[in-house]
Length: 150
Length: 216
Image: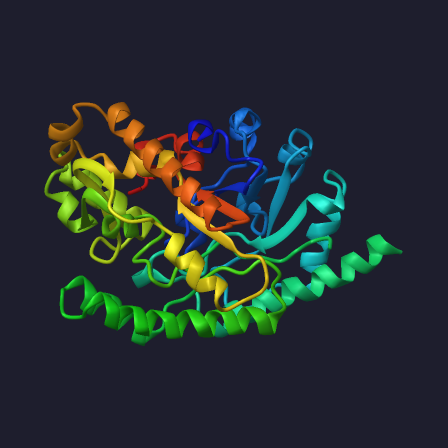
């Protein structure tokens, strides 16, 4: 990865997305475990943003990455792309507040845990639900933004 | 502004788009015709992101078969293969099939970009997607690309790749070059945010036994 991005970091915001699989809606067949074994690897990677899953318990504790890599931006996964209902405002806002314990507010981006349709013939969601999830993230961002400003 | 909202990249495909992808794959639809369908879908995806209030937009990867296999359309020396086709070259077929079943991964609808010759970028991987997306929005956008580790892992299928490269790390050197060329073109086209997808990294550290090795 470092060989790929060498020389580009001042021109482009470069992120890396690492998840635990997105080919099935069955949580039990996807991979479980926190990011601890990857912390060293992330530390050495010359990327600005870590786009990570944090909407399911399979991803483990936010502190694992938060304690070690708060110098990076975090693309905070706050929606599960595989479920049929949008996350509540409380859930998403709660995740953002938790991230604020480790990262400065300007370093936090919000995104779902993964794509809504990584494999064309195995899309894990439908357009209307994906749209509702986007709206939920926008609404929660607004709430916590107001809190931070206050 | 704090907490900008964005996506990881892909958007659900409509039945019309899935049918167009299939027709193009089978050579029954021209690229130009396919692009007309895909561009209508991308427009709708962008409209929905505007309506939802998203800050960094994506094009939904709607032209792509999947987030890494699409490079077979852009890179010389590759062939798109379903996992079912790959099964032919796997020594332990029973184990591979069991892995797919355990993972709930359908062998016929997930496709792999297999290296079958010397790799060379025929055309940019995502620059045209970026340029099209730019015509639809004034907001900043994110471009997604498969990472070098994912591509090296997925593209190397010994039976097909060994003649061109001998060994996997040699092929990886060419993958690094291809991605660097792409970053250079994306940078020239004014990309502000490029995300590399490396989903296999969790698999490497969390899969203790073979059954949990995925297909990527």
